Amino acid sequence: MGEYRKGLLYGLLCYCIWGLFPLYWRLLEHVDSFEILAHRMLWSGVFMVTLFMGIRKVRLRSHIKRPRQYLMLLVTGALITFNWGLYIWAINHGYILQSSLGYYINPLVNVLLGYLFLHERLNRAQTVALLLALTGVLYFTIDYGRFPIISLGLAFSFGIYGLLKKKMNLNATPALTVETIWMMPAALVFITFLCVNGQSALNSFDFMTWMLLLLAGAVTAIPLLLYGKAAERITLTALGFLQYVSPTGQFLIGIFVYKESFTTAHIVCFSLIWTGLLIYTFDTVRRLRVTRMESESKG
Image (cartoon, rainbow, N blue to C red; front, side, top):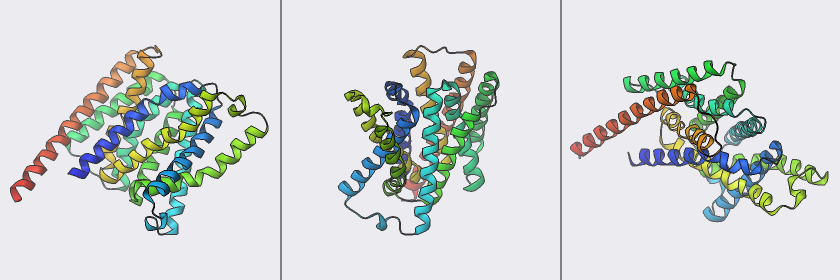
């Protein structure tokens, strides 16, 4: 139960950080989205290698022993890179609504994948919570009026990423280190090409831009590290419901910081999703208390 609570805390911290991401990336709106992606890839790798090799002082092979695991981490690295790139592109091209919807759909994708591939089952309260959340997302999708290709791309790329991480069952720090190492060479080549051709934001020698791009590695890696630690300890279903914290944070920033409109569809979607989340949370707390009482009585 202690590990499960840690997992919930890691997941909550992770999604709170992701919910604040618009504040950070908005500071880099003058930089091309693919260059931002390349810097995220490169500096995430530098951050993770420094963290793992400098602080932990252990070898990757002591945690990741089979070649197949390295290949799987190449796949998960590609998935998270695709997710990052699609998200940045969507924000920079005015598809904020679709990107937000994608992160509302993603928890439902997590629940679906957990049910299909990990044999995770839902009790009555969890089923009601899922149906309420699904209704909210469907209403939001119908009100938007288009088939949300960007939303589904974001939702399924991150959902499959979480599923593969769960099935590999590797320690979060070395796994993320290998993922970012796989991504570094392509990112370095792309950034070098831009710099040589005078097309990089680095050519402007703007100190604030340099620092924001450099810190993009830590900003990217820390929540992913927390996500990996959460995935080790809690079910994919629980991880899915926690994710509603992230798009909610993004919406609140949009409304109160950037003064975006808050429509009836937002109200309906938020109300249904948070009602479902409260039901799920109360049910989880109740089951944890019952389990603890049974454990104490046996002890």
